Image (cartoon, rainbow, N blue to C red; front, side, top):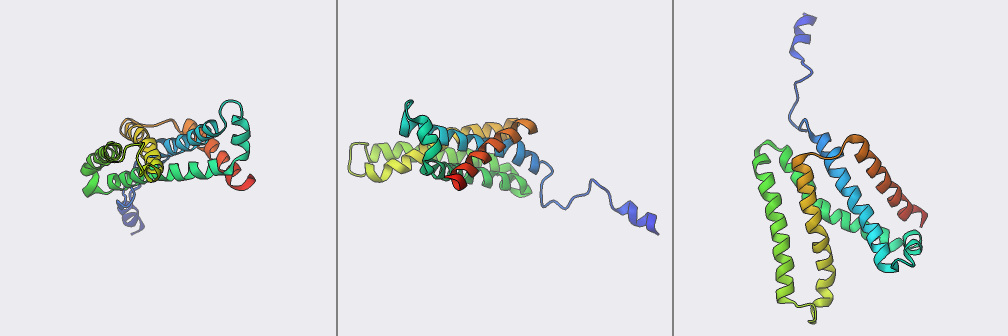
Length: 177
């Protein structure tokens, strides 16, 4: 009787809640892009605020850079997380790629439309400047994320190293400063 019970449970059986490649997509494809976005944003904002001369000062002492990097990383992560969940859902798997491409095309359209409707020299530039910054930062990251998602990601050792670097920067910015 116990043999009959053991034959019914097979290690390859799964309930379908989490896809088999979910952790591969998360660790080797999503986390490297998120980490790279955070690190690049911290470095880019420190370079923008301090220039080459005061880069190190802003990199080590300006807490707002680390908070802005969190916001940018969160902003570009929203479509990626939705894509991962859509891909993991069996019924929506075929629509995930088209949805992601259409999201990126909509962002490009909004960016172009904002420049046509509200030129940079106009009064509405104050309100659109920040929104344009996020949209401009998100578009290349969307393309890179899509390429990573479709063609594989980094090896586990590389993605873990990049993730550890981003986590160390985040901890420094949030707790030390």
